[in-house]
Length: 296
Image (cartoon, rainbow, N blue to C red; front, side, top):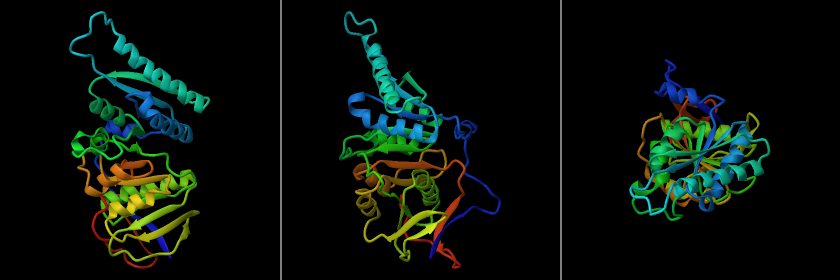
């Protein structure tokens, strides 16, 4: 029998957070979604609306707009009007899907990545669509990679629709980043009333499926590259969770990059706001041990 254990340090210290970001973790912070074009981002809007409705939060729909250096002849603001239509149409869709949902459409002046980062700092979660399914060769050219690495809060990258009723999947290895991912995965699985699948890095003992606080947890040993294992598990999952500690830019490791590029379901890059410094999954009544290389 295994149990989920979260270990903070003796002083009770938590990750360093700005006052603004800490405040935005409150219950009134909206779920936000970045929309470039509704035709390509409708899945992200649908997922964000569902998250807002499920958590009782308002939804903020954001489109980043930059005025062209030179306006075409006769253009008296048509591009700005088009941007306003994009967010208005997205808001109408969200309200149609979830009656009574509070929705705020907004066109924000600025470069896309910077607008999304500011939006993430003021949201409980930022939802964005994925880039090209295969991902660009250079991660720095990917909006989703850049935002996931630099955002001050959780970022949900929508890749595929996920499997309804499928598990929440997370990888653990005893690291601080894995602590964040595990804590978030437990919360998400409980909220969604879904089973939790925990992939153990090299060196972790296999464990049988069991219930912890009413949560069904299945432990699996990773055989081979961690990214490949997470992507394989994503085929029948509704969500994959990877963790990142703190509210400062964090370079994405090869495993997180692989999941963002190839997962078959939405991927949540979780950020610590008020979670313990360290988390481990260990056998009951036995000392915790480090579980192999980092799953980041």
